[in-house]
Length: 185
Image (tube, rainbow, N blue to C red):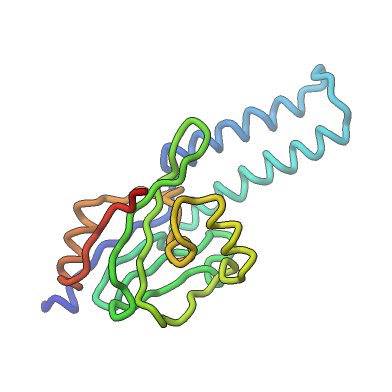
């Protein structure tokens, strides 16, 4: 087997610590909303159950799909899409369009959310997804510490975990000139 046929590095959506804790919170909150002794208007209960119960079900369904969240192989890097709109938001970036693989973090209350993305060469074709418009890019840049071009070519590591050493080995195997870097301010 030559390098181009060798297996790469692939991670599937599933249940990680963050997903499990959000699901547990959703279940507990939904059950509390069903308890008759809780003093809350019916309309608020319904909205809460739809948001927390429905959101939890969608998150669980996404984890259960076991679709590819991230893959490095001989053809390039696959950035798995949202489990809810997987086909429409999945992007394959060929090696000739990649200048670096970038790891970065998004500050969130009481924590950080890890992301992985690809820095792409100037003039590379746009990636699929809804974050390509001017307004979406402006909002993204205001809310994240990275440039819009990197944001649209990144995926949050929710429902899966990245093995940095396996990522580095796969990138070295398939694209020796490409570096795995940490984006810092």
